[in-house]
Length: 147
Image (spheres, rainbow, N blue to C red):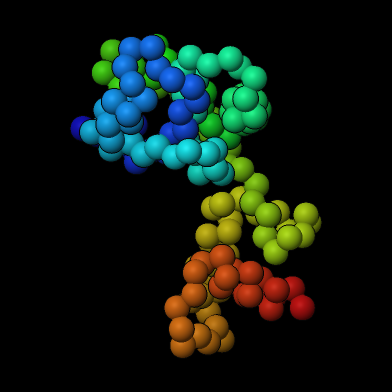
């Protein structure tokens, strides 16, 4: 059975009281979790360790948590789940809208963007001799379909 933090992306805010930030990251790595230094559209959890509550990162985490884009944990919740003492909160997770091609009206969720990319890249009219990153292919193919 896998750990509930396996393959989940985390953002640490502040410094833990129980250990160093590095030790917390290593413990998370040991169960298959991944940390990043910023909150991204793919971030699953933000962990609020000891901090003053005035950082932009914390404000963004609270805002994204309120919208259902990520789960905000405090230090005790994080370590209880990490150590198997409790289960992670069950909250519906909504996909963050993703801006494609810089047009507000073309907002797609991550899942819609990926489906669009896969559909277009499998299309027989899609010709490419060089590999491209998905966003370049998506931007090119989406603009081709919009014109």
